[in-house]
Image (cartoon, rainbow, N blue to C red; front, side):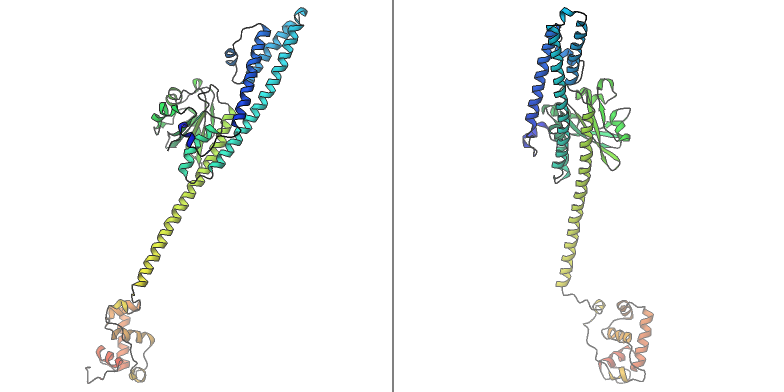
Length: 405
Protein backbone atom coordinates (compact mmCIF):
# COMPACT_ATOMS: atom_id res chain seq x y z
CA UNK A 1 0.00 0.00 0.00
CA UNK A 2 1.29 3.44 -0.93
CA UNK A 3 0.26 6.49 1.05
CA UNK A 4 -0.09 9.74 -0.88
CA UNK A 5 -1.10 13.23 0.08
CA UNK A 6 -4.60 12.51 -1.13
CA UNK A 7 -5.02 10.01 1.72
CA UNK A 8 -4.27 12.51 4.48
CA UNK A 9 -7.87 12.80 5.65
CA UNK A 10 -7.82 9.05 6.39
CA UNK A 11 -4.58 9.20 8.38
CA UNK A 12 -4.52 7.93 11.94
CA UNK A 13 -2.18 10.80 12.83
CA UNK A 14 -3.90 14.22 13.25
CA UNK A 15 -2.32 17.54 12.31
CA UNK A 16 -0.21 18.92 15.20
CA UNK A 17 -2.07 21.44 17.35
CA UNK A 18 0.92 23.84 17.51
CA UNK A 19 1.51 23.79 13.76
CA UNK A 20 -0.74 26.77 13.01
CA UNK A 21 0.89 28.96 15.62
CA UNK A 22 4.32 28.15 14.32
CA UNK A 23 3.28 28.95 10.74
CA UNK A 24 1.70 32.21 11.85
CA UNK A 25 4.92 33.24 13.59
CA UNK A 26 6.85 32.48 10.41
CA UNK A 27 4.51 34.66 8.35
CA UNK A 28 4.95 37.52 10.83
CA UNK A 29 8.73 37.33 10.53
CA UNK A 30 8.42 37.23 6.74
CA UNK A 31 6.25 40.36 6.80
CA UNK A 32 8.82 42.16 8.98
CA UNK A 33 11.58 41.18 6.59
CA UNK A 34 9.61 42.46 3.60
CA UNK A 35 8.89 45.77 5.38
CA UNK A 36 12.52 46.36 6.40
CA UNK A 37 13.67 45.44 2.92
CA UNK A 38 11.50 48.23 1.53
CA UNK A 39 12.67 50.67 4.20
CA UNK A 40 16.35 49.96 3.47
CA UNK A 41 15.84 50.47 -0.27
CA UNK A 42 14.03 53.78 0.40
CA UNK A 43 16.60 55.04 2.93
CA UNK A 44 19.58 54.20 0.74
CA UNK A 45 17.91 55.40 -2.44
CA UNK A 46 18.57 52.16 -4.29
CA UNK A 47 16.48 49.81 -6.33
CA UNK A 48 16.99 46.30 -4.96
CA UNK A 49 14.27 43.78 -5.58
CA UNK A 50 13.66 41.25 -2.88
CA UNK A 51 14.31 38.52 -5.40
CA UNK A 52 17.79 39.87 -6.05
CA UNK A 53 18.62 39.80 -2.36
CA UNK A 54 17.18 36.32 -1.90
CA UNK A 55 19.32 35.07 -4.76
CA UNK A 56 22.46 35.98 -2.77
CA UNK A 57 21.65 33.82 0.26
CA UNK A 58 19.79 30.65 1.18
CA UNK A 59 17.90 31.83 4.28
CA UNK A 60 16.12 34.80 5.75
CA UNK A 61 18.98 35.29 8.17
CA UNK A 62 21.27 35.68 5.17
CA UNK A 63 18.92 38.26 3.64
CA UNK A 64 18.93 40.29 6.88
CA UNK A 65 22.74 40.16 6.98
CA UNK A 66 22.92 41.45 3.41
CA UNK A 67 20.59 44.37 4.20
CA UNK A 68 22.53 45.23 7.38
CA UNK A 69 25.80 45.18 5.42
CA UNK A 70 24.39 47.66 2.90
CA UNK A 71 23.37 50.00 5.72
CA UNK A 72 26.78 49.80 7.39
CA UNK A 73 28.50 50.53 4.08
CA UNK A 74 26.34 53.63 3.65
CA UNK A 75 27.22 54.86 7.16
CA UNK A 76 30.91 54.47 6.38
CA UNK A 77 30.43 56.44 3.20
CA UNK A 78 28.70 59.19 5.20
CA UNK A 79 31.65 59.52 7.58
CA UNK A 80 33.38 62.01 5.26
CA UNK A 81 30.24 64.08 4.59
CA UNK A 82 29.01 65.76 7.74
CA UNK A 83 26.02 67.29 5.95
CA UNK A 84 24.68 63.80 5.20
CA UNK A 85 25.26 62.38 8.65
CA UNK A 86 22.27 63.89 10.40
CA UNK A 87 18.78 62.68 9.58
CA UNK A 88 19.74 60.08 6.96
CA UNK A 89 22.46 58.70 9.22
CA UNK A 90 20.06 58.43 12.13
CA UNK A 91 17.51 56.64 9.98
CA UNK A 92 20.16 54.22 8.75
CA UNK A 93 21.28 53.49 12.33
CA UNK A 94 17.71 52.76 13.38
CA UNK A 95 17.31 50.42 10.42
CA UNK A 96 20.48 48.58 11.47
CA UNK A 97 19.06 48.15 14.97
CA UNK A 98 15.77 46.86 13.55
CA UNK A 99 17.64 44.45 11.31
CA UNK A 100 19.70 43.15 14.23
CA UNK A 101 16.53 42.67 16.25
CA UNK A 102 14.95 40.78 13.35
CA UNK A 103 18.10 38.67 13.00
CA UNK A 104 17.84 37.75 16.69
CA UNK A 105 14.16 36.82 16.34
CA UNK A 106 14.90 34.80 13.22
CA UNK A 107 17.68 32.96 15.04
CA UNK A 108 15.35 32.18 17.92
CA UNK A 109 12.69 31.05 15.48
CA UNK A 110 15.19 28.81 13.71
CA UNK A 111 16.27 27.24 17.03
CA UNK A 112 12.65 26.71 17.97
CA UNK A 113 12.00 25.22 14.54
CA UNK A 114 14.87 22.77 14.91
CA UNK A 115 13.80 21.79 18.41
CA UNK A 116 10.26 21.36 17.18
CA UNK A 117 11.33 19.18 14.24
CA UNK A 118 13.44 16.91 16.44
CA UNK A 119 10.59 16.61 18.94
CA UNK A 120 8.15 15.86 16.11
CA UNK A 121 10.54 13.21 14.78
CA UNK A 122 10.65 11.55 18.20
CA UNK A 123 6.88 11.77 18.62
CA UNK A 124 6.31 10.32 15.18
CA UNK A 125 8.51 7.31 15.95
CA UNK A 126 6.72 6.87 19.27
CA UNK A 127 3.34 6.80 17.50
CA UNK A 128 4.56 4.25 14.97
CA UNK A 129 5.86 2.03 17.77
CA UNK A 130 2.29 0.96 18.58
CA UNK A 131 1.44 -0.06 15.00
CA UNK A 132 0.58 -3.78 14.88
CA UNK A 133 2.13 -4.84 11.57
CA UNK A 134 5.24 -4.09 9.51
CA UNK A 135 3.05 -3.09 6.55
CA UNK A 136 1.44 -0.36 8.68
CA UNK A 137 4.89 0.89 9.64
CA UNK A 138 5.96 1.11 6.00
CA UNK A 139 2.73 2.86 5.01
CA UNK A 140 3.23 5.70 7.50
CA UNK A 141 7.00 6.32 7.25
CA UNK A 142 6.95 8.84 4.39
CA UNK A 143 3.82 10.55 5.72
CA UNK A 144 5.49 11.15 9.09
CA UNK A 145 8.54 12.68 7.42
CA UNK A 146 6.41 15.15 5.48
CA UNK A 147 3.72 16.01 8.00
CA UNK A 148 5.85 16.02 11.15
CA UNK A 149 9.49 16.47 10.28
CA UNK A 150 9.30 19.50 8.01
CA UNK A 151 9.91 18.04 4.54
CA UNK A 152 7.90 18.69 1.39
CA UNK A 153 8.05 15.12 0.11
CA UNK A 154 9.62 11.79 1.00
CA UNK A 155 10.33 8.52 -0.82
CA UNK A 156 10.97 5.06 0.65
CA UNK A 157 12.99 2.63 -1.50
CA UNK A 158 14.20 -0.96 -1.22
CA UNK A 159 17.82 -1.94 -1.79
CA UNK A 160 18.90 -5.43 -2.80
CA UNK A 161 21.92 -6.81 -4.69
CA UNK A 162 23.20 -3.41 -5.74
CA UNK A 163 19.81 -2.28 -7.06
CA UNK A 164 17.66 0.56 -5.74
CA UNK A 165 13.88 0.23 -6.24
CA UNK A 166 11.56 3.18 -5.39
CA UNK A 167 8.63 1.78 -3.44
CA UNK A 168 6.45 4.26 -1.50
CA UNK A 169 6.13 8.02 -1.32
CA UNK A 170 4.24 10.86 0.30
CA UNK A 171 3.98 14.32 -1.28
CA UNK A 172 2.63 17.55 0.16
CA UNK A 173 1.33 18.06 -3.36
CA UNK A 174 -0.72 14.90 -3.90
CA UNK A 175 -0.84 15.26 -7.69
CA UNK A 176 2.86 14.49 -7.91
CA UNK A 177 2.41 10.81 -7.16
CA UNK A 178 0.50 10.02 -10.31
CA UNK A 179 2.25 12.65 -12.42
CA UNK A 180 5.70 11.07 -12.20
CA UNK A 181 6.38 8.76 -9.25
CA UNK A 182 3.89 6.00 -10.13
CA UNK A 183 5.97 5.16 -13.20
CA UNK A 184 9.06 4.62 -11.06
CA UNK A 185 7.54 2.28 -8.48
CA UNK A 186 9.59 -0.93 -8.22
CA UNK A 187 11.76 0.03 -11.20
CA UNK A 188 15.39 -1.16 -10.77
CA UNK A 189 18.04 1.56 -10.59
CA UNK A 190 21.58 0.22 -10.66
CA UNK A 191 23.75 1.57 -7.83
CA UNK A 192 27.03 2.41 -9.48
CA UNK A 193 29.39 5.31 -10.03
CA UNK A 194 29.96 8.09 -7.51
CA UNK A 195 26.34 8.90 -6.67
CA UNK A 196 25.34 9.62 -3.05
CA UNK A 197 23.18 6.48 -2.99
CA UNK A 198 26.14 4.29 -3.98
CA UNK A 199 28.23 5.89 -1.23
CA UNK A 200 25.57 4.98 1.33
CA UNK A 201 26.10 1.26 0.68
CA UNK A 202 29.62 1.39 2.15
CA UNK A 203 29.61 4.38 4.50
CA UNK A 204 26.08 3.80 5.91
CA UNK A 205 25.71 7.52 6.69
CA UNK A 206 23.21 10.09 5.38
CA UNK A 207 24.18 12.51 2.63
CA UNK A 208 22.97 16.04 1.90
CA UNK A 209 23.06 17.06 -1.75
CA UNK A 210 23.02 20.86 -1.69
CA UNK A 211 22.88 21.34 -5.45
CA UNK A 212 21.96 18.57 -7.88
CA UNK A 213 23.30 20.64 -10.78
CA UNK A 214 26.86 20.32 -9.43
CA UNK A 215 26.64 16.76 -8.04
CA UNK A 216 26.74 13.35 -9.71
CA UNK A 217 23.19 12.02 -9.12
CA UNK A 218 20.70 9.68 -10.78
CA UNK A 219 19.34 12.49 -12.93
CA UNK A 220 16.60 10.50 -14.63
CA UNK A 221 14.58 10.08 -11.44
CA UNK A 222 15.85 12.90 -9.23
CA UNK A 223 16.15 15.81 -11.66
CA UNK A 224 14.31 14.91 -14.87
CA UNK A 225 11.28 13.33 -13.20
CA UNK A 226 11.40 14.64 -9.62
CA UNK A 227 12.67 18.15 -10.48
CA UNK A 228 14.72 18.23 -7.29
CA UNK A 229 17.54 20.77 -7.00
CA UNK A 230 18.56 19.70 -3.47
CA UNK A 231 17.80 16.65 -1.32
CA UNK A 232 18.91 14.45 1.58
CA UNK A 233 19.10 10.66 1.63
CA UNK A 234 19.62 8.27 4.57
CA UNK A 235 20.12 4.49 4.71
CA UNK A 236 17.72 2.04 6.33
CA UNK A 237 19.73 -0.65 8.11
CA UNK A 238 19.13 -4.28 9.00
CA UNK A 239 22.05 -5.22 11.20
CA UNK A 240 25.07 -4.03 9.23
CA UNK A 241 23.41 -4.17 5.80
CA UNK A 242 21.68 -1.35 3.92
CA UNK A 243 18.20 -2.62 2.97
CA UNK A 244 16.54 0.65 1.97
CA UNK A 245 16.76 4.41 1.38
CA UNK A 246 14.77 7.39 2.60
CA UNK A 247 14.90 10.42 0.29
CA UNK A 248 13.46 13.82 1.27
CA UNK A 249 13.49 17.43 0.13
CA UNK A 250 11.42 20.63 0.43
CA UNK A 251 9.75 20.59 -2.99
CA UNK A 252 7.58 22.41 -4.09
CA UNK A 253 9.14 25.14 -1.91
CA UNK A 254 12.33 26.70 -3.29
CA UNK A 255 14.19 26.14 -0.04
CA UNK A 256 17.29 23.97 -0.30
CA UNK A 257 18.24 21.33 2.23
CA UNK A 258 20.90 21.93 4.87
CA UNK A 259 22.89 19.91 7.39
CA UNK A 260 20.05 19.99 9.89
CA UNK A 261 17.70 18.42 7.35
CA UNK A 262 20.28 15.64 6.97
CA UNK A 263 20.44 15.15 10.75
CA UNK A 264 16.64 15.04 11.10
CA UNK A 265 16.35 12.44 8.36
CA UNK A 266 19.18 10.43 9.92
CA UNK A 267 17.50 10.41 13.33
CA UNK A 268 14.23 9.28 11.76
CA UNK A 269 15.90 6.61 9.61
CA UNK A 270 17.76 5.11 12.57
CA UNK A 271 14.65 5.01 14.71
CA UNK A 272 12.59 3.56 11.86
CA UNK A 273 15.19 0.82 11.23
CA UNK A 274 15.03 -0.28 14.88
CA UNK A 275 11.23 -0.23 14.89
CA UNK A 276 11.04 -2.28 11.69
CA UNK A 277 13.44 -4.93 12.99
CA UNK A 278 11.48 -5.18 16.25
CA UNK A 279 8.07 -5.49 14.63
CA UNK A 280 9.28 -8.05 12.05
CA UNK A 281 10.78 -10.14 14.88
CA UNK A 282 7.49 -9.91 16.79
CA UNK A 283 5.58 -11.05 13.70
CA UNK A 284 7.89 -14.06 13.30
CA UNK A 285 7.44 -14.99 16.95
CA UNK A 286 3.67 -14.75 16.60
CA UNK A 287 3.79 -16.97 13.51
CA UNK A 288 5.93 -19.56 15.30
CA UNK A 289 3.63 -19.42 18.32
CA UNK A 290 0.57 -20.08 16.13
CA UNK A 291 2.35 -22.96 14.39
CA UNK A 292 3.29 -24.47 17.77
CA UNK A 293 -0.32 -24.16 18.90
CA UNK A 294 -1.52 -25.97 15.77
CA UNK A 295 1.01 -28.78 16.27
CA UNK A 296 0.08 -29.21 19.93
CA UNK A 297 -3.62 -29.10 19.13
CA UNK A 298 -3.16 -31.76 16.44
CA UNK A 299 -1.15 -33.94 18.86
CA UNK A 300 -3.83 -33.64 21.54
CA UNK A 301 -6.53 -34.63 19.04
CA UNK A 302 -4.47 -37.65 17.91
CA UNK A 303 -3.92 -38.85 21.49
CA UNK A 304 -7.61 -38.38 22.22
CA UNK A 305 -8.50 -40.46 19.17
CA UNK A 306 -6.18 -43.27 20.33
CA UNK A 307 -7.65 -43.17 23.82
CA UNK A 308 -11.21 -43.30 22.51
CA UNK A 309 -10.45 -46.16 20.09
CA UNK A 310 -10.10 -48.75 22.91
CA UNK A 311 -6.90 -50.19 21.47
CA UNK A 312 -5.23 -52.93 23.53
CA UNK A 313 -1.68 -51.74 24.28
CA UNK A 314 -0.65 -54.95 26.15
CA UNK A 315 2.52 -56.78 24.96
CA UNK A 316 0.40 -59.57 23.46
CA UNK A 317 -1.74 -57.27 21.33
CA UNK A 318 1.00 -56.95 18.71
CA UNK A 319 1.08 -60.74 18.17
CA UNK A 320 -2.27 -60.64 16.41
CA UNK A 321 -3.35 -64.02 17.78
CA UNK A 322 -6.18 -65.07 20.04
CA UNK A 323 -7.09 -63.01 23.11
CA UNK A 324 -4.89 -63.66 26.06
CA UNK A 325 -6.09 -66.44 28.36
CA UNK A 326 -4.94 -66.29 31.94
CA UNK A 327 -2.40 -69.06 32.54
CA UNK A 328 -3.05 -71.12 35.63
CA UNK A 329 0.19 -72.34 37.12
CA UNK A 330 0.53 -76.12 36.67
CA UNK A 331 1.81 -78.13 39.55
CA UNK A 332 4.72 -79.18 37.42
CA UNK A 333 5.72 -75.54 37.01
CA UNK A 334 6.70 -75.47 40.62
CA UNK A 335 7.10 -79.11 41.59
CA UNK A 336 8.88 -80.69 38.60
CA UNK A 337 12.37 -81.91 39.29
CA UNK A 338 13.57 -79.53 36.60
CA UNK A 339 12.81 -76.54 38.87
CA UNK A 340 10.58 -73.47 38.69
CA UNK A 341 10.26 -71.36 35.53
CA UNK A 342 12.07 -68.04 35.60
CA UNK A 343 10.19 -64.77 35.03
CA UNK A 344 11.38 -64.59 31.43
CA UNK A 345 10.49 -68.27 30.82
CA UNK A 346 7.00 -67.60 32.19
CA UNK A 347 6.60 -64.71 29.73
CA UNK A 348 7.72 -66.93 26.86
CA UNK A 349 5.29 -69.66 27.95
CA UNK A 350 2.38 -67.20 28.08
CA UNK A 351 3.12 -66.14 24.50
CA UNK A 352 3.42 -69.80 23.45
CA UNK A 353 -0.06 -70.42 24.88
CA UNK A 354 -1.61 -67.70 22.68
CA UNK A 355 0.03 -69.26 19.61
CA UNK A 356 2.95 -66.91 19.08
CA UNK A 357 5.81 -68.14 16.96
CA UNK A 358 9.43 -67.86 18.05
CA UNK A 359 9.85 -64.81 15.80
CA UNK A 360 6.78 -63.06 17.25
CA UNK A 361 7.92 -63.83 20.80
CA UNK A 362 11.39 -62.41 20.05
CA UNK A 363 9.86 -59.19 18.65
CA UNK A 364 7.44 -58.79 21.57
CA UNK A 365 10.04 -59.36 24.29
CA UNK A 366 12.79 -57.53 22.33
CA UNK A 367 15.18 -60.48 22.42
CA UNK A 368 16.83 -62.58 19.73
CA UNK A 369 15.10 -65.60 18.22
CA UNK A 370 17.98 -67.83 19.37
CA UNK A 371 17.34 -66.71 22.94
CA UNK A 372 13.66 -67.62 22.52
CA UNK A 373 14.62 -71.12 21.32
CA UNK A 374 16.84 -71.50 24.38
CA UNK A 375 13.97 -70.46 26.69
CA UNK A 376 11.58 -72.90 24.95
CA UNK A 377 14.06 -75.74 25.44
CA UNK A 378 14.32 -74.96 29.18
CA UNK A 379 10.53 -74.73 29.50
CA UNK A 380 10.04 -78.12 27.84
CA UNK A 381 12.61 -79.68 30.16
CA UNK A 382 11.16 -78.13 33.34
CA UNK A 383 7.59 -79.10 32.43
CA UNK A 384 8.61 -82.60 31.32
CA UNK A 385 7.09 -82.01 27.90
CA UNK A 386 8.28 -83.54 24.68
CA UNK A 387 7.09 -80.67 22.49
CA UNK A 388 5.39 -77.27 22.50
CA UNK A 389 1.89 -78.76 22.44
CA UNK A 390 2.54 -80.80 25.57
CA UNK A 391 4.08 -77.79 27.30
CA UNK A 392 1.02 -75.65 26.49
CA UNK A 393 -1.33 -78.45 27.63
CA UNK A 394 0.51 -78.92 30.92
CA UNK A 395 0.49 -75.14 31.57
CA UNK A 396 -3.29 -75.08 31.01
CA UNK A 397 -3.86 -78.12 33.28
CA UNK A 398 -4.96 -80.39 30.47
CA UNK A 399 -4.26 -84.12 30.90
CA UNK A 400 -1.66 -85.49 28.54
CA UNK A 401 -1.78 -89.10 27.27
CA UNK A 402 1.42 -90.40 25.88
CA UNK A 403 3.05 -87.84 23.61
CA UNK A 404 -0.20 -86.09 22.59
CA UNK A 405 -2.78 -83.98 24.19
